[in-house]
Image (tube, rainbow, N blue to C red; front, side):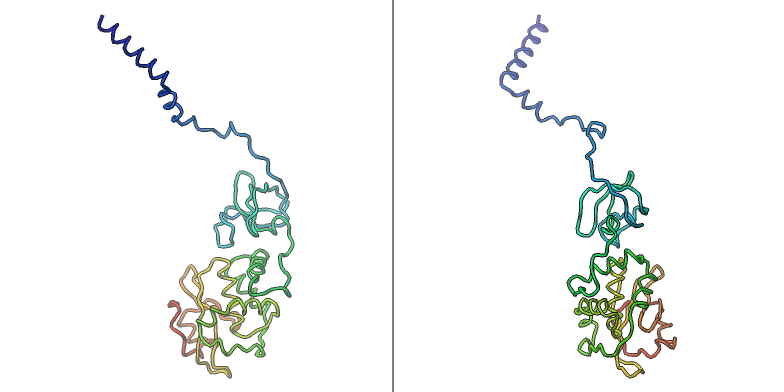
Length: 261
């Protein structure tokens, strides 16, 4: 008898809760079953063919990790545009490709390069020539010619050189000429765009007719190294810098660079 009365009490309580909406409110708080991929229709993205060989990057920049290579003529599905990069689906992988992978046309003409847009030109260089250290060094060394008519005597220390690197780089790209400061600014900005850690090096005393010289220190897999597209020394240690004929005249060097051992 007690069991029957207890059951009746429970039924009456449930009925009260139902009519008051309490259970309904509780039910609305319960999360629905997670939606599976099979229940969602995949969005249709515009499909294009790659206009050039390139790489699928994890992030929209050259210093990012490469996911895989992209072959010219392969299908890409465009998801969205982000600056000069496209987020795409390539097979089963998703990542970013540089815009010239989609339409292989240069972004910028040399004569229009300024200190505000020179990084676009650097991106085109990295797209065409590669992001490895040797390719960047060879590009600057090959495209530049030394000219002492480009005098920047007021840029007589690393702080001033760094402040004006945009102007120096743009000038180097436009004219393909310059002094050691043009060479060093061009090389440093290109290497940094490719993802390398770099520093300006500056000597206030040399044996040559000029009394100063600028170059770059870059971090490699083997440690920091001196690199100079003007004097053509490549990945020198500190010891080599002071013993090789092309660089041993550099004496009074600013103490702003890591040791190159």
